[in-house]
Length: 291
Ligand SMILES: O=C(O)[C@H](O)COP(=O)(O)O
Image 1: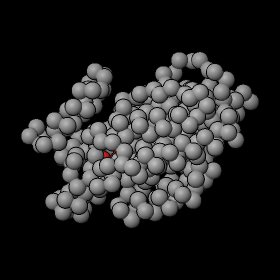
Image 2: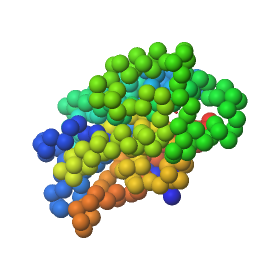
Image 3: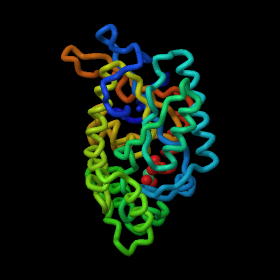
Image 4: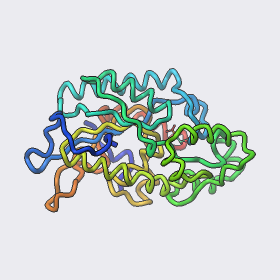
């Protein structure tokens, strides 16, 4: 099983356009491949208030801005040691808590690399839980259902009703996404499995970039990154149930080529740039019920 605690110390690419700027050396020896760095945005105002966020477009808190700055410094130090880690672009969810984090991180890197917005990285649609304090949902739905909706792979939260006060806020986010996103996203609520399905094309493009030896840096959300991890590490539903993602901690995935040319993760679950800090953040996150 890969839980966050199994990750040891130590991002879609843009469209798979087949080009390379030579910023990565992976692939040259026929074995090593590109590097994927995943970063959950810094703490949002809703994380700070312990509310379900989902598709609401809320900003970073002051703590979140500081966390994004720390992630930027960690990545700047890492690329100074290993220039092949410089991504061609920083791929981000369109939601402002992620795109602000991505901009802070990109500014600290050589180039700086441009941002590429990928709608498939938006957070899981939390349905009727959207905008609700977690303790209220826990009280109203009961302990067992609360955990089932939050952590199970297949359960969707109850649908977001047309007269829910959060409905216009979610609709506002949906309206700002591309037509393809509105056609593909469930309008009422998503299970983690739904998020995995919408991320598949993104992972396919990312795999191609990694196979070309590129470095890919992705900024997303707690649940969109848990879902992406299912694809990156081939996690079972049981494994992803225990996976938590701390805010603002870069997680590096390196790959080699298997005998059949498939990408093989060097360390299943990846390697945090700041292992000690990530463990501390994960402990704190779990004491509050996880991602
Ligand atoms: O509340 C939520 O939607 C998730 O649990 C966390 O989402 P975030 O990573 O966007 O904070």
